[in-house]
Image 1 (tube, rainbow, N blue to C red):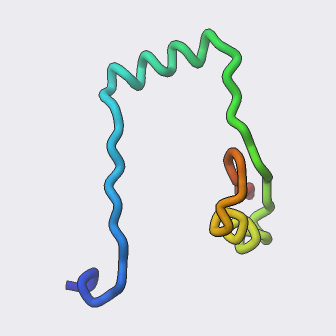
Image 2 (image 1 turned 60 degrees about the vertical axis):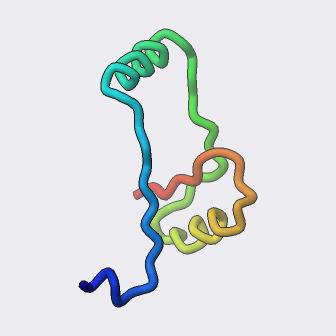
Image 3 (image 1 turned 90 degrees about the vertical axis):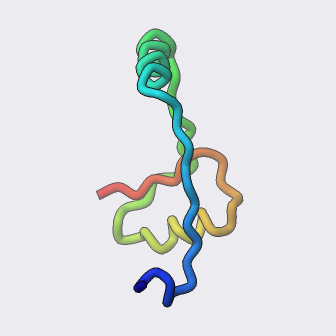
Length: 66
């Protein structure tokens, strides 16, 4: 009942099978694949990192590091 009293958006995420996950890991191990990182923020600047995500102008991952 608690969830019904709040204004929330719930989104489902569909993922592949375990077989697909294992195939992906084998490919990553063979190929030089690296994630694109837009910026790295220290934990103290987490609100700034969230602001970058909200503006939706980033290309790549926004990382908050401890």
